[in-house]
Length: 232
Image 1 (cartoon, rainbow, N blue to C red):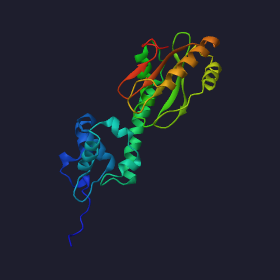
Image 2 (image 1 turned 30 degrees about the vertical axis):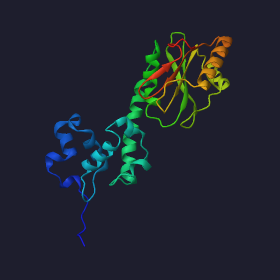
Image 3 (image 1 turned 180 degrees about the horizontal axis):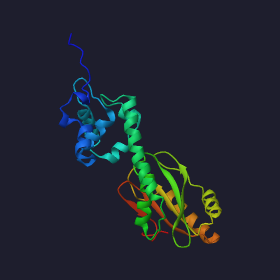
Image 4 (image 1 turned 90 degrees about the horizontal axis):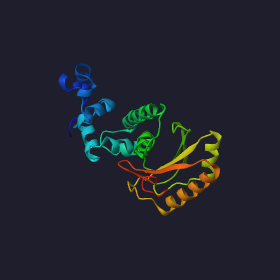
């Protein structure tokens, strides 16, 4: 029977190979993605260092940190050497990064084009595995007053109630509305339901003197703007 082997702990590595020490000596920018993840997980397995484990996780998702951000605790624990506690550390670190982006986006933002809308909503909709519907409320200068979640659904779709949307806009005394929802599939083409809702919202907005300026279909890599396409 082979002797029991302790997991390969970072403390047993050569000093120049220890991510924590490397960060202190050379700064955080000097570390690879795998080394940063290794710091989070601390130790590896009897045959793999923490960096090796991190590299295997990254390799499984094409070394794409956006894909890593989509993984759940359950997804991460499928990897050898990753228990629940280590998975929670990784998920928590990535969530902090997402919240940092969201905080930066809450400063006064003026919307001048569809790209502004897309960039403004990235912190909220990037990496989501399910569909969400949001509204952005603007004042007369097209400065964002508030963004608000309307509904959250499955992979295939979510429900947006026009009455609820206009109620929220009227309560905030908004001057105009922008509609935004994501397609987790990555397909930017609007569905029949998307087109029908946009038409209904535009007509109601005209009646209430609360115009719908655009409806953005958001994906991680691209977007569709009803206004830009002349479909609003």
